[in-house]
Image (cartoon, rainbow, N blue to C red; front, top):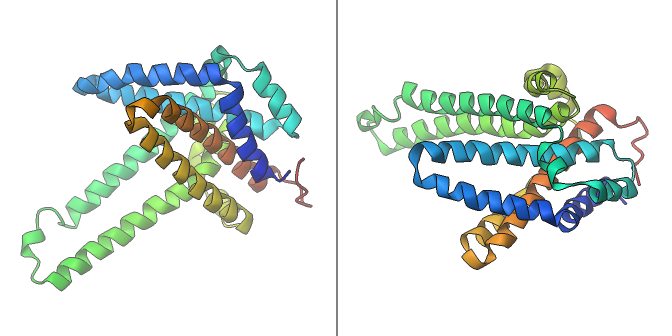
Length: 256
C-alpha cells in the first residue's frame, strides 16, 4: 500500500474505530456553538475549537509518523481512548497551536496594514481612472496572495516538524523553522509539492463536505464526523510531509 493510500485508509479508520471520540467532538461543537451568541465567548469558542482540532491533528499525526505498517496504525486506533485522543501530547499540540496563531495573526495584521499603507481604503476615491484602480488592486492582491500561499505551502512542514517534538517549547519553536532556508529547500522538492498539492485538493473537498453537512441540521452529526476525518487527514498529511522531507531513506522505498 502506498503511503498516500495508507493516509486515507488511516483517516477513515480513525473515524470508524474511534466513534466515541467523534461523538464527544460533536457534543463539544454543539456546546461551543452557543458561545457564538455572546461576543467575547464567541472568540473564546473559536480558540477552543482550533486548539481541539490541533490536538486531533497531533494525536493522530504523531502515530502516523511513527508507524511502519498498516497493522501498527490499526493497533494504535484499537488502543485509543477518548481521554487519550483529547489529552495525549497536548503540550505539543498547544505549542503548535500558539505558534501558528501568532504567525497567522501577524500575517493578518500585515495584510490589513499593507491595505492601509497603500491607501486602498482611504485614498481609493483619489484614483484617477478605472485602469489605475484595477492596477492598484492587482498589485495588492499579488503581494498578499504570494505571502499567504507561501505560508500555507510551508505550514504542513512546520506542523509536521512540531509534532515530532516532545514538549511545548520544542514544538512552539519548531513551527517557526518554516522561515529558515533549510525548510524552504526541503519544500522545493517535487515529492513534497506533489504530496501537498494532492493532499490540499482532498482537504478542500473534505472541508466543503463537512461545511455542507454541518449547516444541514439533520446531517450535522455527519458533518462533525467529516471535520474529525479532516483533522486526522491533515495531521497525517503534515506528518508525512515531514517524513519525506527529513526522514525518508535515500532509496525512497515505500513503507507497507
